[in-house]
Amino acid sequence: MPLLEVSNLQIRLQTHRGPADAVRGVSFALERGETLGLIGESGCGKSITAMSLMGLLPESAQVSGSIRFDGEELVGRSDAQMCRMRGNRIGMVFQEPMTALNPVHTIGRQVAEPLRLHRGMGAAEARKEAISLLDRVGIPNAAQRFDAYPHQFSGGQRQRITIAMALACGPDLLIADEPTTALDVTIQQQILDLISDLVAERNMALILISHDLGVISQNVDRMLVMYGGSVVESGSTASVFSAMAHPYTRGLFAARPHLGAVHAPGERPRLSTIAGTVPELVDLPAGCPFAGRCSHTIDICHHERPAAQVVGRDEDGEHAVRCLRHEAIAQALSAQQPAPAVGVPA
Image 1: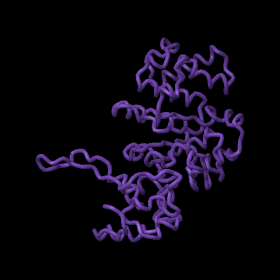
Image 2: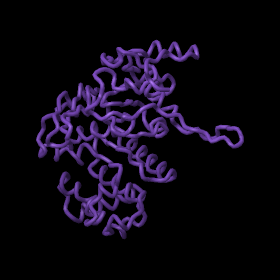
Image 3: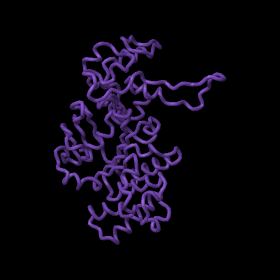
Image 4: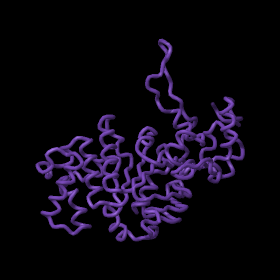
């Protein structure tokens, strides 16, 4: 039995423009020790999927489908029941540590709190364990800085503190929601290496959320590409990167900067872009969520929602894609000829 099994997860949010389907039929499973990446542009549904696992959705959100964690159904649980799960068996590292940390409490108190709440430790025992955690995540002079406040630490150190908080009770599942967004490249790699080491050390399952293909390629075994609240492509990281089947996945890959590329003198290189903008959730087309932005769109794409189709398999499972035209597009690309487009700007 998988540690985490999400089946046909649907999340509808109430907005000022009416109901919006933020997550539409997302399904995946995760075993202990496995690593899974969620990737896509802002607003594609990555973070709200993670928030649903933690029970942190708005009160007005309507959730259907199933989230089974270690055999127990989480959908429909009360906030009090989820409080016993959060920080205990499921830990989360948020993308902005200054909003995740309480500025009026010392970092030591915040790291020790889940130990006292979930493990029933006394003040002295929790302090000792919290200092050990801070030391493990690389906070220098942890014992001396236990009573310092968040503003007295650098951005990288604050992120390390949030990791210590998330790991305090030894969770079975760690969710890292863009944990390196505000950090420079050197600190970013240190944080990712730290998360990777701790996950392996404690045999935790990891869900890593990112908009950076490079981060995903180096840190997870399997990945889900999300757009418009749907998973448009999924599979092992190696399989997806070697045989990208969805136009959106190809668009994300093409938009990456290429270091070391040679250009003519005076030429200003331009990054590839995906035409159009991400539609608001209330404006998603009835068919493929990527219809209209995709240069291979034809009329049926606007009206028929694609089902998942298996395009490959490896030892890590199936490689699946949701695209009505993936075969035609693949053939056109292999022949170096663009597939026909209908009314879509280049």
